[in-house]
Image (cartoon, rainbow, N blue to C red; front, side):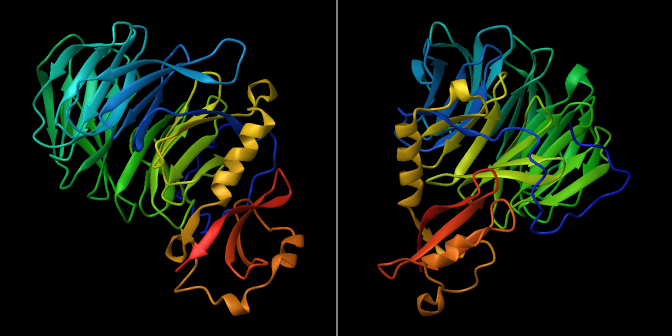
Length: 396
């Protein structure tokens, strides 16, 4: 089931209850290691390959190895002179588009690993790129503008001005009926025929990510920790407080679920307006994308992209999952990053590890306990696994 449109905006509170588990939950499928710095953006090709863009100034193309859950890097696209923070595929062409802090957009020939076109015009960091059904390239920038580039062209045919701050995300609607843009000015704008047709308000902080939601409209996420749903005309349909931390990216799955990620070091799956699953990561998660087969890929501040799947046949080997969970558990978590935590942790008054025998009340619930060595440790509750999983040691 996909989200059901609402006639009015709903507020589902800071701690949305988990949905009934009608679908299987996600588990680690593969880790994609090779970048030397943060993976700032991930995307998928229509053939199921994974694209990763990194602060190491490169884009990598990954393909699943035959008869394995592992992915192999089959190409590294090098040409930008600064961080690469945006990447997407051009469906049906084998081309890749990237945007960088060097202010350029590059269109790549994926098979040759070489640039096809350099798109110049932005006067600051290119923070996001997208491709329309017609093959037009849409880019957004710290220069507060959105630019539209025709397929095959090198000159922008539209420069959309109106935002007061950085443009963090762009989203072309299907059938060329408009473009949405998200900005640091806390608004989402809808553009039609080169003009601003609507300015959407509601977010109370920087709007960071956008995603189409088929048969409904589109979703936005922001530094205010909320996920919002909008019609293509701009009507507010739903508001859900997903996290107490910044949300950076959102993706729509083929089954209607939504995936979000952010500063709280987690991937969260939202189903019918409620939190269905939370998967802790070793570092903040910059980006999430859905693959055509229903898997999810995340890009993290630790320089690793990770694929998660609900299919047992694509589940990573048990030793790989154990290593991932151990890496998560080994992290030091600043107390200020824990939702609802105010000030430092009073270790003397924390419950000991016996408190973990009591089940959690909801998916993603946090609990801090005093370990045997006296250190404060953060755990999160998994409804599907019916257990507490260690997220890390709390510091500060």
